[in-house]
Length: 288
Image 1 (cartoon, one colour):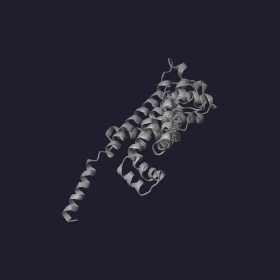
Image 2: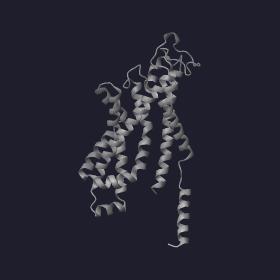
Image 3: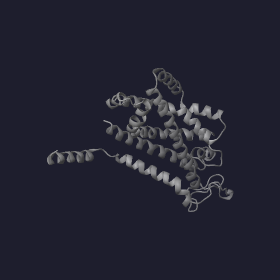
Image 4: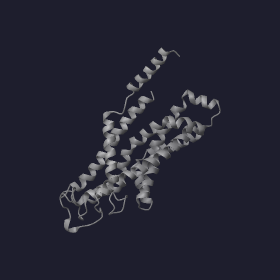
């Protein structure tokens, strides 16, 4: 290679790096806000060392003040401390559900794409049947059957939300299996499991992250909804969904008790959806 052609190649690589789109400004703002939310609920209680379960009946329903920035609830408990601890349960629970459903959906999607045709047909029909019923209703029924606990609620959400992931991952894997390099791997004798682990999954990692991120917001909503109707953590342990439930009877007198956790849920879902859309646009461009 001549010196001139080498310079041309380097210039082309530099130009590709410059023109390669970065995460959009909205995506960066959403990522920053989510990071701020995670940091707040993770280390916030270390700085705001107020017991979220301590009751002070003489200070019940106090308005916001220096000692209680978000006021107190009907039992005199500090609302800020309960919001921070409740955020830990909500975000960690939703993350575990997304991880569980992603793994289960990826396994079933891979079985459909790489398995025999009869297995693909059977699993696809099961998936379509389960998708005909709203996942939150299935999770509600399963939570009623299982013993009431937060762990069982997360399990119920995993077992009823994997269908969407399975269909998405099946489609992604099938598209990747149609690539020419997969045919080359099959010709040299690479087993299906090796094709999946060595070639398909590394190339689909970005798309897998996007799929999980996109559905994270709906998982938070489902988790909060089930907690709101009493299938989440047992009181007095706070979680954003049951904080709204506990404050229903005081809405007209102190609407902030419902509005604050509601805003936490709404803003978190908003930032997650915006980040998911930005990541999707980035991954779609990279895969063109």
